[in-house]
Image 1: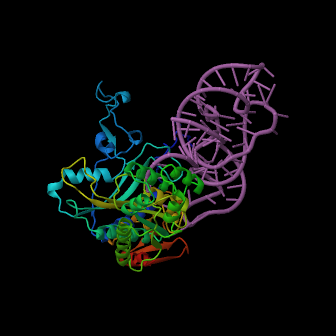
Image 2: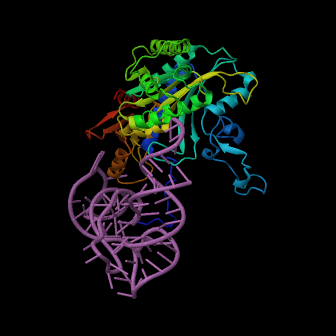
Length: 433
RNA sequence: GCGGGCGUAGCUCAGCUGGUAGAGCACAGGAUUGUGGAUCCUGGUGUCGCGGGUUCAAGCCCCGUCGCUCGCCCCA
């Protein structure tokens, strides 16, 4: 056998996943389930450009170092061919939320509000890849965007949670969706003597690490912001009751209302738990109300596989109008990596074909396709045994090996039995499996 | 951006205190002039990631570099 003549060493580019055929099919099937759940709530599909203007991407406080800038290999001088000039004009999108804000601001006049859209596309982040973390990964976003301040009902938060919950439940996952509220969190922080916005933002970042760091480390860090750090942590963790100030009460009411309404929409769907957790913070500054993170009960080490929240005005820097929204994102790539090691995804075949037609069976492929089957036809005059073996390796379960008048000889790989059937009957037979 | 580990055949890897490279799997052909997964036979000279150094001699030791990987930061 000829060895490859290329001397070029082919190695994967780190953080940019590529799948083998069976994995790609599993990935697509997982995506289809999520899309179906999203559309069952009436969210319309949307795609935006992979590339955005850099200033739009970094306007929301995203670290410019994490953004992949674009340049043309043959760019002229002064056209952004020099990183040190900061002349990068275009970059790959970092998330789907900012492009959506830009899209909504841009097409404001043609859209009807409230605008419900889902978006399933890759995003790119200039990070060091590691387990479950990629530089290119797919997100599955849904957002509910209202027109004008005060026009975003709490029911929208509940709907978003329920919709994502439905999507995850449709994948037969065991997960915990933890919900908190920034108003509540800020009220609690204020109640424990953290009085400035800047300090509360610092505190939120520290609380975001609550599960990762030791309690003493957390207390040390919070200790620089409040003398009551220990009591604060205990309150957040539910070890002691929250005090009943007006702002805390208001925040609690929001969380509880969102949870109750979401639970109504979820009904008796199984697999997931929807709970309040006052330690959920989210690092991003633009959240103003509901915040949510989701972990798998079977793989908590994966981190959050679905998170989001409410933002009072996402398109602030892009539009005169206030465009409040609430959205959530399923980390499809991270989730799919784990799912593909589970059934049924782990045993997906490498082909969508349902039946193999051996070389030289006249008219069979055409007739079976006309009957509605997905058909792979052998085009090489190889020994039949070899054909059958390769077909089964690709994940096929049946082959048509010969034609007998209007009937085809259908072979079952597993039992190795053959029998004559018409094309329509073969369709029925295979679809019943 | 910062640390740890690793880089040998298409894949997984072995290669002793340095003596100029091997196995399994996979793949292809044949035994078997077309209904399979068994068995047997046959088939690999691979810049041992790259560059430099030490040595009579380097896959092995040293330095650098690139890549992959696992963590940190941050996040899905």
